[in-house]
Length: 360
Ligand SMILES: *Cc1c(COP(=O)(O)O)cnc(C)c1O
Image (cartoon, rainbow, N blue to C red; front, side):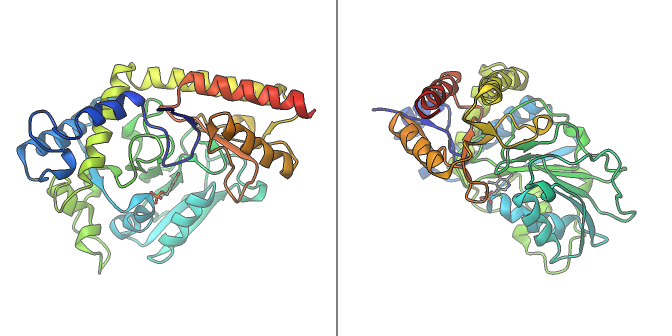
């Protein structure tokens, strides 16, 4: 068996410990005689798995009692519609456009009401986070929407926007559990888990209780109402059962690692190794304004497309895979999520130094 260092933006690297545990339990989950994949979601055994996953997530993030945790399907992209369908009571919402994912959410919301783009960083290819300390928030906005970490461009909000009292809705797909978070500052936090938590197929929504109502847009399907899933404890229909089980193992792994503060310290250490190198390199350069740099996704270029392509190819041969940048940005992108070991980042930087010596 030989494992690579996987810098994919998602689906992405998972902790090896978790994969091994899952392998050990594959044929017989704790004496049940079956795999979690084969188990009724109505069984007592599965009920313990999903309840424990929620309890562990609540502990990790310090989720207040007036927030509900929902394990849903449809990916982050389905939330682009589910959010306006459930929250757009006045049919008005304000969006901060910091990349393609925020733009897609904005475009989707426009199907349901008046979505306003109150700030954008599109003028500079989304290479920074705009100042959001005094935005023209709409008087009747039902919520203010951000994509907190921009997976494609490698930027992250370092301060949350002043929403002037409106609920903040945040897509945290690519920074979920990467650092401590004050949940009480948000109305709704959500993310697809395949970036920083678990296997594709699960999206976690953390929503303040007063935002879960029957008063949704006419025609909202039963399956797309938060209330349906909140009332049923995420077991209205068959949930993505195996994915939730793996997420639960990752929550426990993060606790063993010391929780979200320890995760943040480790993520800062890993990111600093890469950014410090980019800042002193004469060949590679980062594409993002320093003050907006993400700890999770680090895009960089050489300025020469052919050289970029040889870098990606040679890195893969050296066991450093999925470093190709998103098609809209080009160049390279290293996603260094929670589960990427420090040694992986060190090996990447060693490889970059070597490549630079050869091509300078
Ligand atoms: C990957 C990603 C999405 C889309 O996720 P899907 O689960 O594929 O729909 C949305 N937002 C962000 C920030 C992402 O990184």
